[in-house]
Length: 121
Ligand SMILES: [Zn+2]
Ligand SMILES: [Zn+2]
Image (cartoon, rainbow, N blue to C red; front, side, top):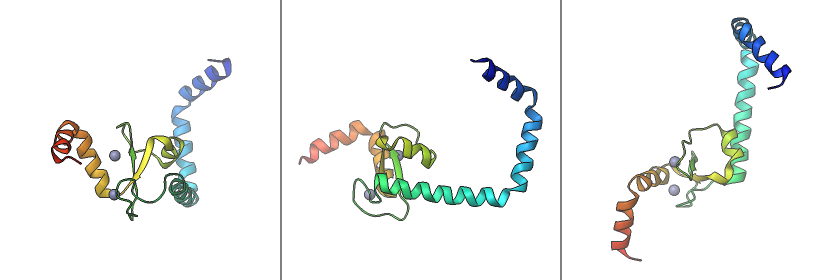
């Protein structure tokens, strides 16, 4: 850690309460602008996500009203759109029902494999 970082850390520690209050006051004062900004920001991010990951379900090709983004390595994926955008290679777009199905399959993978073998091609 550099001296500057050390200093900033100590400063934050010492003025924790004041900083918190300052943030609170700032938020109260600019509530509407902040909310409006966050709303357009979220909307923009969702539009970008659609561009990157598409807007139809990866499995059934349906275009759902609400797109689900599934993390393909089984990681927790209730994450911010900005995170998904940054790690778009790790996500796929799904419709609601395929998303639920996929989680069921992942949870009972062995049994699904057994069943698929039985069903054949
Ligand atoms: Zn689907
Ligand atoms: Zn999922």
